[in-house]
Length: 638
Image 1 (cartoon, rainbow, N blue to C red):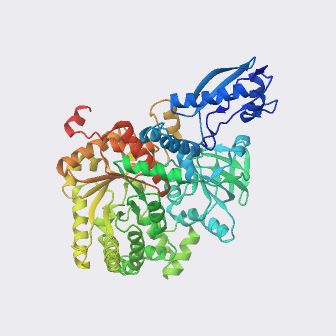
Image 2: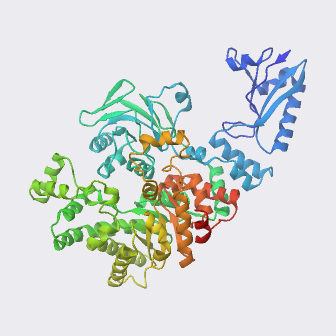
Image 3: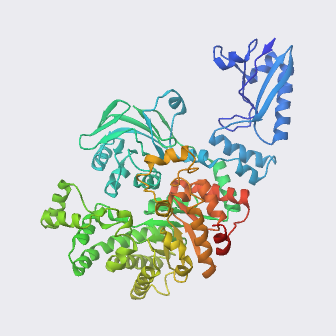
């Protein structure tokens, strides 16, 4: 009598991680019978009824193999003339949840140490535990319509809409919507928040859609070049099919694939074992993990996941709220400083409330608040219908709005009138934000809380830009009474190559630095993050770049500039706090690189915090202490 070789005999359950033998067998069969699925196999537990001696021996061997390899084994065996033969054993593959349980159990059993357990966990797979997933059975039988970039993980199923307004309207009716756009813009913020998922034809891993979706924990597939979106007609064309508003579509943000119709979704499962892993990470990692968050809700989520502060608050996201966007537009359209200040005075209470909530949620922890960064034209309506509505709200001719939109038009906004340049030319805008930060901090102190704002000046390339705005911040600190009372810092974002090259000069004035690696990658590589998707896939395929530099730090180029920046800055100010807040801050290999070059912290979207914490701990296990270098050594390698 022969039992076929078994490809599914495991020393533990590979799906759940339970310490229970798992497998199947077929009496009087050959290996191809098992693979072909032409016969229904029996569970391995039933072997004790038909082959009790072999079953007992097999279970003993299971234990011996686990003792020897200190890992769950995938075993092939056969039985000839009632004699057991082990044909092969190897470390078994397992689900994300099972890998966590096995790691914890094997540490508790004394089979492995904590560092070994952590190194067995794959951050990308563990990430799936934090997000909804399309049922694997449905994925196995489904045929994707197309493929884009897995810009934000998780699953999303809903009806197609082509505008942010439609997404909001669907949500009000209790209907789940998938926002489909050629590309998103800041004007779509509310619709993106209302949508179940986002699909775009253009954009990369750090495009507007990708960054915002990750922060909101909304599934997103970006840069799906095979789709054609006609927002005016309300049509999506892909794979020879046309979809209209209301048609169902399913997104898999983990793979970048999307499907027609409604695929079933399963909820994430977080348990005590996962918490145990995060405690291990806490005891080992030397790189602090913070979160990119703009609201108290997101800040609390990040804190619950173990974030040690906020590494980036994008204040411009606050401006798009319905109760203040028209005040922002009034400020932009104002013809002179007094008119701008008048509008900013209306905006001040809103900003003060924003910062009160954010700093309060992170009481006792640092909160980096970036002053307004994007160009002003992004806040103005560009559609004729919306311009007429704004004209009526502000009681001004629509021609004035059209003229302002035209005057603010830029051919390359990323390199245009934004960031600290706005603060230098229109200091009253930054002044309002800084005043709101300090007034909120003082109010929180009276409530017994410990606000720790770190005010970040964006897009600095010249030290004089920074010193002008630093003086403004210090002036308002004194005016509000915050000086000497509020624990605050003033620093800058390193996103322009010149700033990295002049880091020693900047470090004389800045108390902290944070790499904005999205823009630093764009400016160093000469790539547009929104347009480079058209050729970067081919570049990676041909080996020009090992990975898309917007997905993982380009260590040979951008990384060398970062390493030089750290070394230069610390040669002038050894204790300067340096971190990273670009989306690379949640990518495991990038987190490990940040550890190697000696960054104090990394910051990422709230739901990526656990993965960054795991990667930070794995960096210590893999590489040991960080390896900072002197400028001379770095230059010598160039």
